[in-house]
Length: 210
Image (cartoon, rainbow, N blue to C red):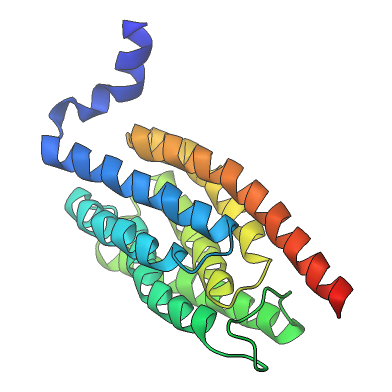
């Protein structure tokens, strides 16, 4: 048992206790935020802003620029999503769940290309392309940027992007030595699958009424 524990958590031996506590706290708020997203509850955004703010600090300290940029973007998009989810649309008190339009799919592609290009530029400037994981970072950044934008727009397709990005991130974070975060993304993958099914059920009910 001790060998398994050492294998999973040996990298934390040199970490500050405060950083470990902050990572666990950020992980907790991340799970809470995604659960609220699954329930289609606007509290997804304030809880998400707490965890992203913590991760921005930690990832900057650890030099993981791509991941830091992702979380900074999450924080900004949470403000936008909070507004979109609570505004009136067609005399309804909130923006309803819907599918992305053809135009929104094109915009999603644009967001993916621009975000990947931006991270590529940042990594090049700071000479961070010294390992294959840096290239995977650029890919997941694009995927998560699109996922967050679609969630802020309350589009059901956001869950598909979250699932894909989470699946890639689980082994990536474990390889980077972020075991707690790797376990977190494994949990988020499962919640995202249930989130997609819950939103699909909600959307089907809405379409049936219409």
